[in-house]
Image (cartoon, rainbow, N blue to C red; front, side, top):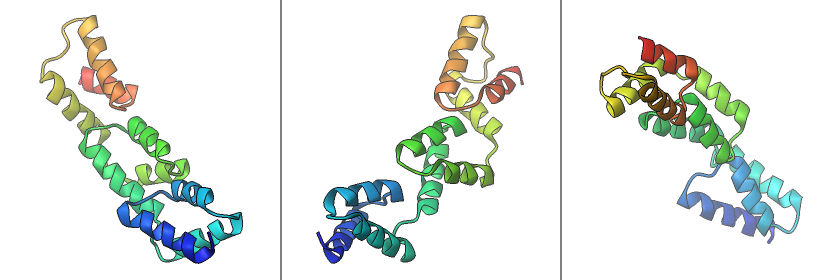
Length: 145
């Protein structure tokens, strides 16, 4: 594929959904005849803001927070999508989210307002909240508070 065909292929992919730059670069490398054309196309897409990892991270973050996921789960999900770990960390730190309130809301939705009665029930709540990506210190604050 030449540069024009590769660029058209990339635009076709981006017309269907947003791709992280890493994933799009891998897809283009499969189609391209050389590395230089992939880098040229990626540079052009980035300069026109057709590929914007920061925007994609923010949209995914809002979606994951609305699902009640904590920062650990969100980071894992975004890494699996091929997004840069440092950029993800930076955006999460800049985000104004009360992780305690989010964890408390998730706990109350699943287990009502009742405090766990015994160790087995408490372990069940802790496992569930950890699976949802909340940190242990926030979970303990929710259970003790």
